[in-house]
Each structure stands twice: as C-alpha cells, then as structure tokens.
Image (cartoon, rainbow, N blue to C red; front, side, top):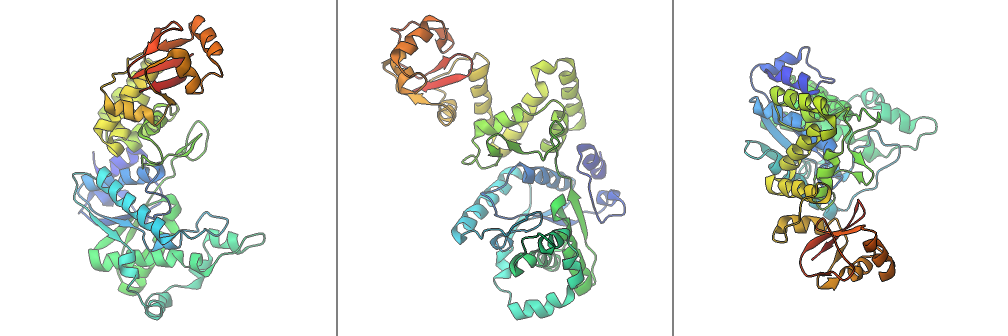
Length: 404
C-alpha cells in the first residue's frame, strides 16, 4: 500500500497544502513534528499524530522531532478563551525530558533527529528578530486568525503580546528547520494549521522557498461526538506516573464498539489484512470484545513495552477473568498495588476487610462471608480463614483488596 493510500485508509486525511496527497509517495522529504511541554509528556491526542509520523518514517521520509522548549514557555493560545498561566522553568524541563523519552519509546528502532527550539531561540536577539523575521509578517495575517478575533472581539478576554506572538515563534521554527535541517514539510494536528501556515509563509517570503503542511484530523469519539482521549478520570497520558499502565490498558479495553476498528487503524501498526481479520471476529461475536482486547494490547505494548503490557493483560484476567494471582509475579503484584487497597497478610479475613476499609466492622464482614460474598483467589472462605500469602481478596463483583 502506498503511503497516501495508507494515510487515507487509516483516517489520517485532513487539511493540507498539497494539491494531491499522492505527492507523498514520491521522493523522500524531511519533515518535522513537534510537541510543546505544556503537560508532562504526551497524551493520546499527541499519540494519534505520532502514529501518522510513524507511517511517514516507515515509508522512507526523514523525521525531525521537535520539543517546544521555547514555545512551551509561552503556550499556544489557539482554542483558549483565557490567557494561559506560565509554567515554571523547572516544570518545563521535566516535561521536556518526558517528551524526549516518549519519542525514543514510540520511534524505537528508527532513525530520527530530536531538536529543542530553545536551542536556537536562546541565541536570537530581539531587534534582529523584528528586523529579519517580524518585518516579513503582515499584521492582517495575524489579526485574521479566528482565535485572535474571538479574544479581541466583544466579550472576549483579550490577549497578551506574548500569546499573540506565538504563531510567529512557531513559524520561525519551520524557517529555522528549513534552513538548517532541510525540512520542507510539517506534520501537525488540525488545531496547528494556522501556526504551520505561518511557517510556510515565512519560508516563501524570506527564503523564496516552498514548504508544505499536512495536518491530521481531530479524533472524535463516535459514541459521544466529543473529542477522543478523555475518561472519567481525565486526560489519558502516556506517562505512567500520570496514567498508570493498568488504567491505560483499561481505557483501550473499554472503548466503544462503534469506534474500535477506527482506533485500531489509527493507534496501531496492524496492516489492513490484520485489521480486517479482527473486524470480522468482532462482528461475529461482539460480546467477546476481540477488537478492544487487541487494541489494548497493541497500544500498551507500543507506549509502555511488551512486559508491562503483558502484566496489564494478566492483571485484567485476574480481576475480571477468574485467573489466580501468582504471588511470585512481581510485575503484576506491583501493578495491582497501584490500583487496589492493600492489607498485610497474617490476618483473619474479617480483620483484612476492616483494615482495608471495605467494611465498617468485623460483624459486617462476617455477614458478607456467611452470604458467600467474600472470596480469596476465587474461592469462598469461612470467617476464621487466615490469609498467610499474597492473594487477591474479592467482595462482590468489583471490589478487590490486594493482600501482600
């Protein structure tokens, strides 16, 4: 499958400066894709764009992956009704380190160049920037941006000079990379179209060169009609300190039936024949959730590695599939320890129920045990049962205690 065909099949077609996307099937070009350190690394909206980048790289195009150390000090105002709060330099540095780590995880085994735009902006003289760059930027172009008009219009909350200048700063990134890395294509999310076009315009006005933009669509949850990537707990991050590996796996395992095949195309590297096979299995027996299981496995493996993905899969089988916890499976025990209330072994079941806060008294615990509502590793127990090992204690259908 040609690159243009693959991008179309996977749903990565949106606004572009190309007259014909098939131009991507020609000679390799050097492109760039960037992430600002506005959060601690990437979330799954960024991941969708990164997957498109993976396909360009696999088809022979050269990748420059940018970390927005400079732009992150301002924050992109596009789509924001209010002025952003500036982040502390220490927080930005930590966020940058996480983005770099995630780049190397996602694009493992591929050649690419990582750059940080603070490395060139820290050398830029303000007056030189105004003379050499700002002089070439028409105010009409900047004032014409929809978010600028919204912020400055009646009822708007205004905008600072810093945020107003953001698109010029990002546009300069494109110019700098064009000059120093031979970059002639920017890959970006749909919300970055205006900033990317600012770069194309600078390259044309200052260098007399041609450059292109390929923007990617916003991923929409078909079941809700809202932006994909949120859960009841908030944003789904790639950083396991913000979204645990288990929670990450569960998010994918519980996506809607209506959109799951689309998510397989976008968020995995499965080819068309593999996706078609999963789709056929899903259609034949949707209750088995074969597509969700494959999606959860593939995305968790890509982001967190095979070992942690396997642990999340085993933990799910233990909690909801009747599998027995192996006390020696430290990867799963550690994973569950982040998700469940814990109690120490060497106690009676009733004492564990109370210490974990699952029941208010031992009497309540005894009544639940008598009613068959308490099990240890899947087996019903009596009230005088003492737990002397690492096990999973379960109350009812969905309340668990990890005994360690």
